[in-house]
View 1 (tube, rainbow, N blue to C red):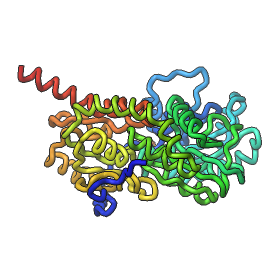
View 2 (view 1 turned 135 degrees about the horizontal axis):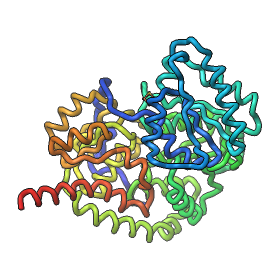
View 3 (view 1 turned 135 degrees about the vertical axis):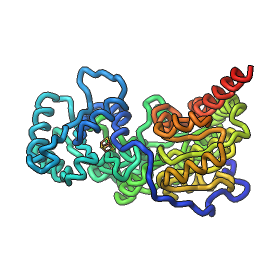
Length: 426
Ligand code: SF4
């Protein structure tokens, strides 16, 4: 197997610039938009304000369901002022919901900034409701509040809350943690099956009855780099993490698969035979988009927590130069292998002080700035080209067959800017 470490030692020893100022990120409620699609018998009940309901509606777009799988129990002023017993009202809402909806097998009570500010104890509520509805319905709580979190942490909090409830198993197995679009997850499972790795289970599972268990003979691989709490929860259950670069691009996918394959004793020649054709397809698809990206500079503002693996992909496979790679949190157990693959040079920053960081963007004027929606328009108005980080979470971008699309997400804004500039000068 090829050695994936960076030729100049990588960024493992690069000092990290830590900033703790004002941040510009979406809250964890956003994760419900993709989680509810993965979990077909689940309902996400946000306990929040009208603002939370609006965020969820606008993030979910115009999806109309005969039976929606998320909703908001709105805390009114009387609740917020402590004039009403919010726990009693929540019980009544849940009773009404579950009476009407026999399809719900998992109910998530999702905390928000307002529920946390008034210290509404959703853990206690989930325990009370579990006692009332078990075993037919599992009730779990997690926080999607934006007070201290970024938007992908909603998924992490949700999966981490599920881990203690998984049954125990002694079986030697691989558990994949992370919510992927179905088409991408199927590709991953197909590759693992062809390699002879199994049995494989996935968290989150589509249905409550799916046999997902965990124990000391479980090894797990993460498919998303923002699952720090899930990683800790699985380790507490005795499972062992397979550390690897994340499966973005041809190299990342190969390194991720190889880490799993070597754990399961797959023969290198068999690995080569299974991966050669999709690797080749991925390389050719990336090369096309890389023509636009080559030698261009990129600046990542902290948002999705995908920043480090994506910077590795863009610098190594697309020929870009990273100026700064900002991430909300840098969890070395998770992204350490990606950090080691990035040639030293860029600034690594954790957290945000948005004004200081914007000063650095203006000073360096990157060819592409990857940032949140709130910062993209002002930067575009200043003549900078941007990419919305949230799109990277909503678009299928993992594994070989999506590598070209992933590169295309970054090349399109640069291409568009080039065309506009040519038209202006014509
Ligand atoms: S959880 Fe907080 S940040 Fe998110 S929509 Fe509600 S109030 Fe806003």
